[in-house]
Image 1 (cartoon, protein in one colour):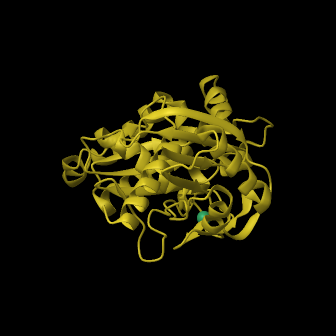
Image 2: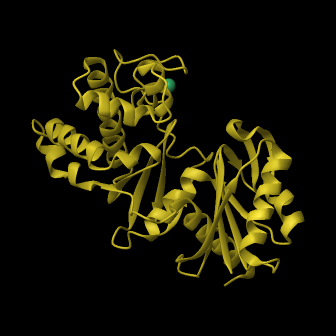
Length: 300
Ligand SMILES: [Zn+2]
């Protein structure tokens, strides 16, 4: 039994998979707040899938910075400042889990569903913006675990102010939090609300929609020009806009390439693809990372 857990700010999605990462069963439960509640939630989700039997391997994707060995730092939306999550979960379920960043885990899950791509960047469009880069099925973490943290690359010096102190960061343009701050209209889905209002002719919404598209297009171009990945996968909550987002992003990339034979040669627009539908890529990727770690330990 391979288990993967995608631990988010509000819910834990846990999936039982086969060795190829196909989902056999899944459960969903509230995350809870603080280290004890998060560990309780993970243990309960695992027990719900295994019926109390020991799983073969476990992987966990969790927001925040992840130090080698499974220590989670600065997972602010879980109420965790620092926690040795791997040790805490191992104590509860009897198996030491592999722990990685949630975006990186989702990137591994998405890559498993795109077998024709040797390398992908998974661009997570949520409250914030970050990417996970995967090559040959495994994540590229970088020297300090920061590979893909492109949210605070400024791509427009005249763009909206970002809490980090710069202007026109990719995250300020296209992140849900930045959009919500500029739209300033109550609603649980600010980016979708902005797109609806823009469609209805609201000029402020239209401007913000343009900034979202600009930010996503810049992120895609940055990822291709940095890592030359086969495809950039649009994922995260904002990506549920589907073609309403992807269409304008591709148009913006084509426009940018119209005056550059170099950019045209890279087919940027055609390399932006949607996340494969109907699969919990975060949990699936976590399960695959758990399996890979277990095989590394056993020397398979
Ligand atoms: Zn910033």
